Length: 152
Image (cartoon, rainbow, N blue to C red):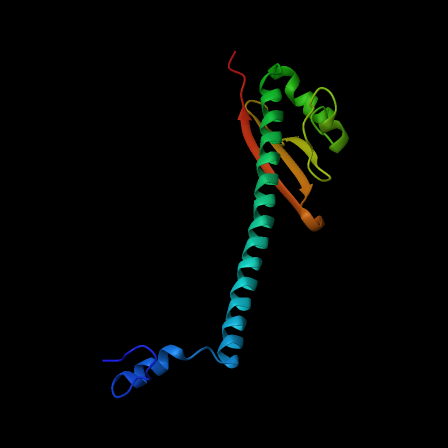
C-alpha cells in the first residue's frame, strides 16, 4: 500500500513512471507535421470541390438556356422555324441574352447558336449550342439536339 506523500516502490514504480512522462520535442514535431500534411490535403480537396461546383452550376445554367431556346422554337409555326434559324433569330450573344425579351443571367462570354441540319425538311433536325468561358477562361460548351416535325 502507498500512503500519501510516499514514493511508490516495487511493482508500482514502473507504472507510475510511465504516467508521469510527457511528450518529447521530436514527438510534437512529428504530430505537427502530420497535422499540417492532413490539413493541406483537406484544403486542396475543398478548393477542388469549389471549382467543380462552379463548373457544374455553369453547365446547368447553359443547359437551361438551351432548353429555353428550344421551347421558343417549339412555340413557333413550323413553316417559319427554318427561316428564323437561318436568319439568326435565336443566335444570341451575352448582351442579347441579358436583354429583353430573354432577361436571362448570362455566363462569362456566353453565346447561343442555333442550327438546322442540312438536307432535313420534315422533320427538322435542330441543334442549340451554348458556349461560355469557365473560371480561368477555359472554353466550355454544351449542345441540345431535337427533331421537330409538322404533322398537320
